[in-house]
Image 1 (cartoon, helix red, strand yellow):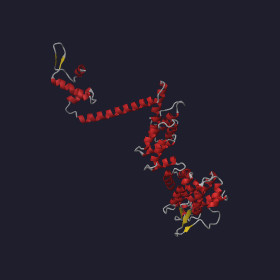
Image 2 (cartoon, helix red, strand yellow):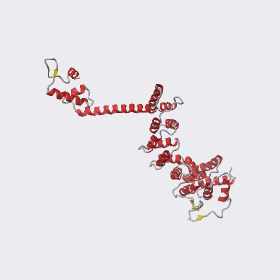
Image 3 (cartoon, rainbow, N blue to C red):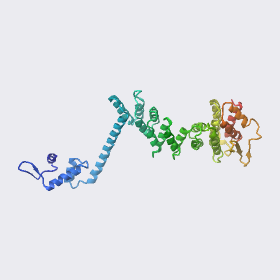
Image 4 (cartoon, rainbow, N blue to C red):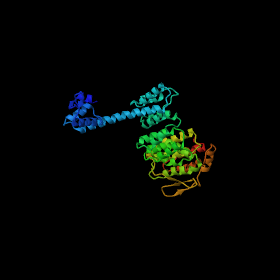
Length: 397
């Protein structure tokens, strides 16, 4: 090394001994130590020579450049380390396995969405990508088509990768949290997955908690009800939310809670005609006896009402649900109409009609509310309720 320093003129010996060996003075030794110290910072020998000889050569600029180079090198090293760990986790049996995995990693790192999707979907049927790699990719993927392919591939892993997705539920980025919820929903149910979705249900970002509510909806899952009703009120995938509320209400023990929550929103004075129509249609969804044809007919009534909702009365009547699941209509004058004394089939008769199709206690609660909504001062809301009641009477088919 000293010979190299001498050849470059970086550190020249003061003299030589009679035997021809280089002889260094104390100043030469100090210079050698200076050279070695600067080398530890990553400076090249040419840069060191300039630093030691040129008094105009300011260190700040060079040090900043060294920091940038070092950061870039570390990033490349981290990528290499991650790639090696990914290959190690896949436990390849031969070099073709390694090459396929390297190709997948490169494909997922492409800036082209079609290339990323192709990397996920192509490959031998029996070749499974490491779940950790897929989980990291799905949390970062913004293209919906590529994300769907990644979730499909991750679901094939049989629950592996859940730990990375659960960690994603707590990420700072709302987009990452939403993607984590979507991916968790397609994994096999487990206590850890359910707990993570429950955490997401309280997320401050509406898109995250609404996604979690749709995934958690199951008979008796009342914790999802407030968010699902929020979706109906705001018209954000209200059809999906109404179907999810129907799933929750399939447990007869929480029917009253779901119907009461919808009725409370119907009674809100600030609820516009379009909002109240959506709430009424959500109540229809709770009636387990309605068929697809019934829903189509009632939905058509709602669509007609939506088209003319600008001319509705705007105030309408308010509906409340009692502790027994019955309903009461509160008009603008402050009076309350009860269920007694009505003409036509009452809630009980219509409940029997639905019960013949296998309905539960949900149908009775919904019929009670619909009887009131059919007399609502908002004609658009009344049309939806009337279509439902005619379907039960058999006259609207």
